[in-house]
Length: 182
Image (cartoon, rainbow, N blue to C red):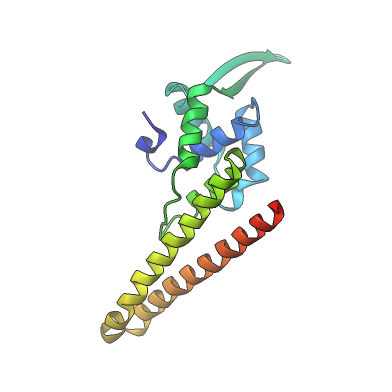
């Protein structure tokens, strides 16, 4: 069973990504999240531990329990099946979403685990997909403007501005990435 079948799954993939760096406790992963991904995806211990439990149950992560200073310590590690699942998710196209930018940013955050050329292709495809969404919305604009009130038009303009910003930002990001490699 793939993580996607559980729902959004972004937290689970982020946890797998952290485990690609090495074995960690749930506390360690929360600390990593607080210092890195929390500005686009944050999770409490109340969601991290159930996610880790699901990852163990699905066979993506191994759990080792030890006693340290009289306290139980749970150490998680990613196994080959987990690495394959993570790499499959990472290699899949980034999906354009009107409501969820965190999934795209979570993927890009871990692109260091992909060959550079593959990451570049995924970002280029994502930009093309955003441009297509913007084009579709732009084509609807004349029809909407004839019938919509100022409040509805405001949300249309927000959508167009959001896509413009996203396209500019990702193109700039892509340009910077390519320059750093040259």
